[in-house]
Amino acid sequence: MRLCVTILFLLFLSCTHAQNFIKVDALVINYPNRFSKTTDLSQLINRDFKTDSNKVRAIYTWMINNIGYSYEDTLIYDKMYANYNDDHIKPVANFALKRGTTICAGYACLFKQLCSEVNVECYYVSGYARNYFDSLLTDNEPMHAWNIVVLDNKKHFVDATWGASTYDNVGKFKRDPTYFYFLT
Image (cartoon, rainbow, N blue to C red; front, side, top):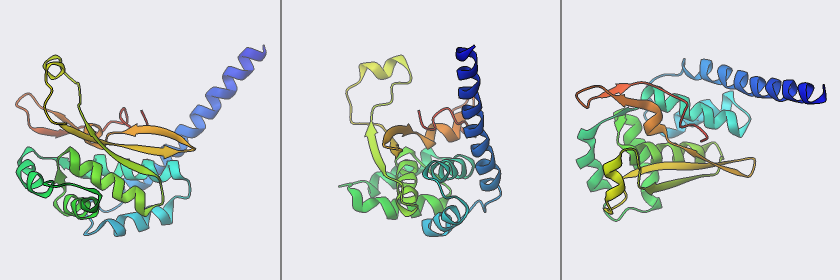
């Protein structure tokens, strides 16, 4: 009986947590789909949400629904990332925000910048994404970027790039938001 009550209690906590995100998602979906600078978006998030987890969810939800992936942006970002360092985070984030499209590094910069502006600890990470067999055989430069966010002293991966998109049968970006890559 105790085990049953414990399981029900844990399920209740889990559902309550999910319901909080349902409210966050519903509010953020009504935000404007374009901002001229990150501070405009972060001010809305700070106004509407008080907990770090809700702020992070708001950032992720807004990004996966409003920022597209564009291979055409690769050349632009290659120039911007020459001698890349932390000083590039804010300009790259604002550039991605204004364009409405970016590559993985732009997603990661934008996510990190917004987290910084809502006072949530976040890191930019670059490395290898092993999502198909051939990628296991390469040892090239890192080819993907994502984030680590710290909530309640625990680190979680967040990948807004993969959360925003999938590709159609000819390799074009297709918006297909998913929360699979949120706090993994």
